[in-house]
Image (cartoon, rainbow, N blue to C red; front, side):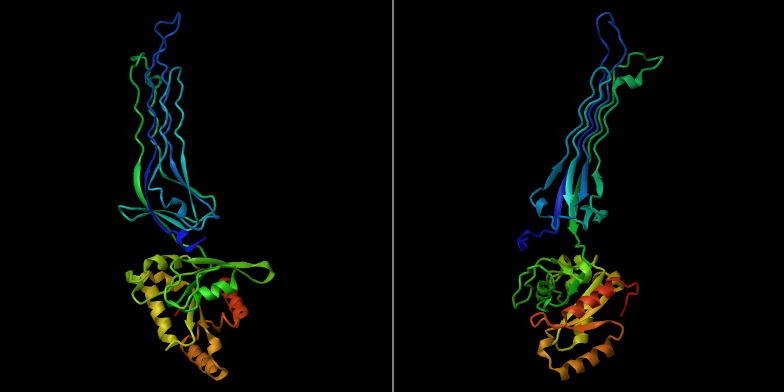
Length: 339
């Protein structure tokens, strides 16, 4: 998938089908000139149904569909014939899709299970035919119910990536490079800020054929929680990661300061993010000699004695297996370290 094909935000107008009219037909056959009411019911209007598809990773297929409509139910007929229901409109979306009411911003549904279906707007009910209204005092009712109109709704679709590990760090911290060496993903890599403009997913192959999913998220800048830079476009993707991997380059001025800034942006966006497991990886550690690495390790242990850390270098292929081991252990333990 190319970067331009990743779409994680869409607005669509939905309209379900109208219910068909009930029939007010009176039975008229040879030798039965004054038969009773035999009008059938109208058919139900089509629903608009959202269905989860685990093979989709983007909302790109909906990018140019600003209006989605279901068909109307058919009208009832004679001989109590019920009109056909309108055809339901199915909309496939990736796992992690959030459906919101555009006007109120209220969450209507979060789609998280494969093949899960949810009716977002229901089709109108078909009207009852006059056969329902026959009584001892009204044996030939000449009226029937009209069908109920379908619903209209403006919705916003937001995609929150479903990954086990989310990479958190400033731009150019080495997230894309790491993803490219521990998975089969091929993210865009260059030595300037915001190389990654869209999230990338990669599957890490672990021991004994086990796997876990890592998401490379566009880098944080100070003020991202207020919408600066890429702002909410990346922060919402972190919400569903069970573990956050903080990447801090070895040549950073202060590891603790960078970590605190990153953590503060997450806190301001959504305090619940602080409940997630955390791991710290010092990237570009091939720049450090043994003495500097020992000093930095002592500094990290003093500042973050409760958060596991590891030194890695994606370019030099150093520390990658210990990183995988640490992530797997963190993903599968019950205790969640907190700052």
